[in-house]
Image (cartoon, rainbow, N blue to C red; front, side, top):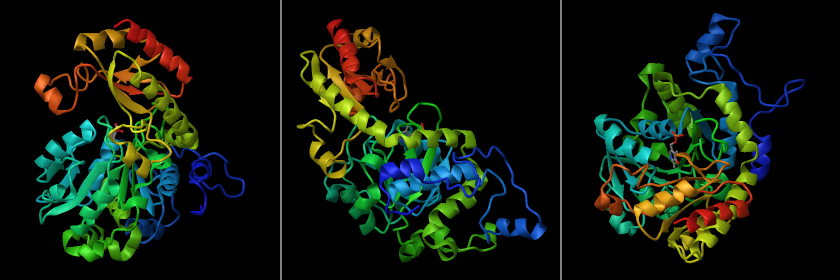
Length: 427
Ligand SMILES: *Cc1c(COP(=O)(O)O)cnc(C)c1O
């Protein structure tokens, strides 16, 4: 589809393009395999000489149509779906790095991403240095090493809600000849398109707003096509030297701007196999059709709820980038002027027990680990995600005993506020 269309049009129209007499709605190609007429036809697919489907672990038409839609939304040149956001973030690093390599990552990232980069890739011989995303550029610059291969951050960090200064990070990454990877899960391309600010690769957990209904786990990797791998060929031999497992193909030579995604499909999907089921991709596509409507409503609801909380006598603080006076208000205005996301956090005055009483008094807002779907949900980090930490560790992680994470849904905002008000009255 033409790049001239705007995001809300892309959400309903891009991806699946039926020809004469074909289904209007994206079909679920629930098939592991695909048929050919001659030995030679299928042979060309195995040699990467021709584009086509042969086994769903590598590619599937339902998955590809949805990847194409997300690719257009982000303004990229190629994209692939994965079975989860974790797989998307792992593949992105594994496609660039090998044992002995190093990455730089914002310390304010999703807990799963933190474990992946702090522990799991470490066991594979790779290293990660975590940096304070709000530190001055000169400070962050000290984390780079000769073997650094990528820089990673989250547009809006889950759950810290810090907002990444994408241009600052892009400049640092490019000065060291490496790409900036941005996890754009919370902002979604409706509110922020990181490629426009210098990011090179975007990842998503589509399990959140993109799916939007808490129905299917999924992930996505999108490449802007902007990073010049050949200009830094010695850092990225996997992309710029022959792949002996495909008869010596050189990805940058054969696939140009699609080199990164082609390599991730041909090597990582082939060998590791975190492909989404076509059924889940179909569900994701249904979610994507209404993404712009839901994101707008999530943001307007969250702003109303944040204002209510900010003015409540039992509330100590509110973190929401859409509130004037918030620590990230200015940077949010720059990168996502139409809104941030529906997730906010706030602190109750009082003890951990007060927070528990508040949580257990809620009737509409449900206690759920998930965030970023249509239904409002809450979580108490000190009792749940950060339960193993002692008081001092909690403080270091920026979690107070009375802190609540609230994912504002798309219900009527007054009903959400009424529920919060009655629960606050119980504290
Ligand atoms: C949830 C989340 C992930 C992990 O995604 P899954 O789909 O749960 O595997 C990664 N990054 C961010 C920012 C997330 O919120």
